[in-house]
Image 1 (cartoon, rainbow, N blue to C red):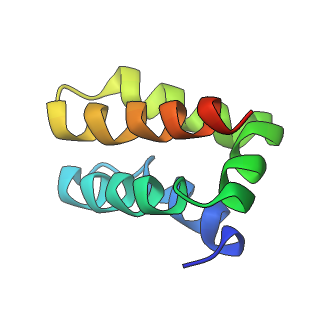
Image 2 (image 1 turned 180 degrees about the vertical axis):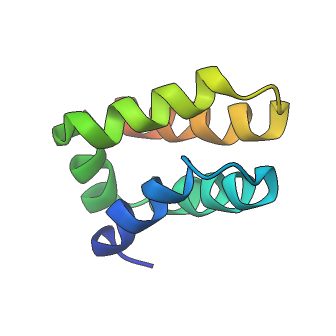
Length: 78
């Protein structure tokens, strides 16, 4: 997985199927473990906003955990 996948994966967060959003959140969590991906997330306001909106808009604790983990990883890299 690479930072180039980021826009496509983030778009999956907007889909109505919770299973798709869950898988996207897992992929983002894996991507966030790489410095280049975190840089791409932090510097792209639209991507960052979509992650925050998805985290706030779901009642699924696993999705929230994954997406908060993405933000945590990326904040530690700064």
